[in-house]
Length: 76
Image 1 (cartoon, one colour):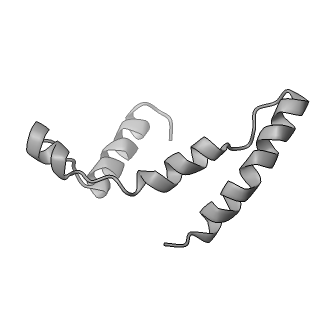
Image 2 (spheres, one colour):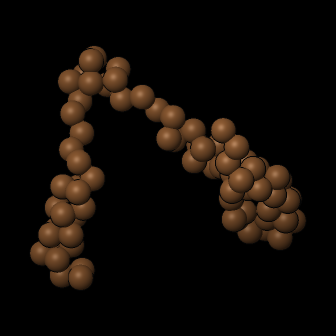
């Protein structure tokens, strides 16, 4: 699958890394960070469910609970 954003990021990451090294700053992103982001969507939860009994909850439920917690903590 061709991912235009990831392809551009892969091509430009070395330049950000070199510039960061020369300037003494942190790079905006690295080749490794791009790879992690690209690979993150390819994980399969089947083995976690089978081996560990992991049953993640829905994103909707998670966001609702997060909002409620942030509100209760006075962060909203």
